[in-house]
Length: 168
Picture 1: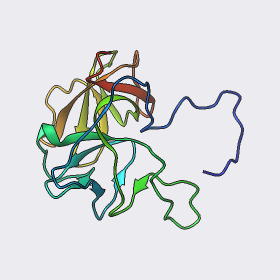
Picture 2: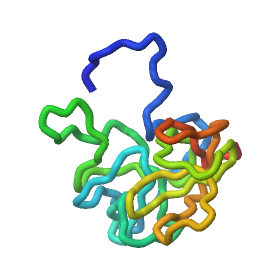
Picture 3: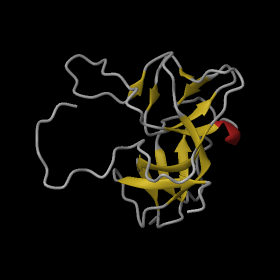
């Protein structure tokens, strides 16, 4: 992104950044590859590792829980839109870092109730949205990721910290 303004206090992080140096672990692919599908994969979102070694962040149906991971931001997203200043999509065939555990920053696309520290993190596989809270009757395409909210609270559009498997 090209600088076009200056803030006194810079942003803490961007979605997909590590939130700590606690233990983290990659998902493993049985095919030896982990690359983006034809539609690309969005950085800082949840995605599923498919049987052929591709990674997809928007699916038609919920995957197995063991195949869900979080896409880390490694500056591997490319700017492909004409005159755009930034890009957040990993293009087809490019490597994807999919994590099964760790502490990360994520954008709360939606919330349910008044989520507080420890609230569940859900992923809507049809839209790719990250939902923080406890849905009363989630749609069939919304699944519990097994991750939890580490920030004290969450609001729609806020960048919050989530965690899984680090003992936080």
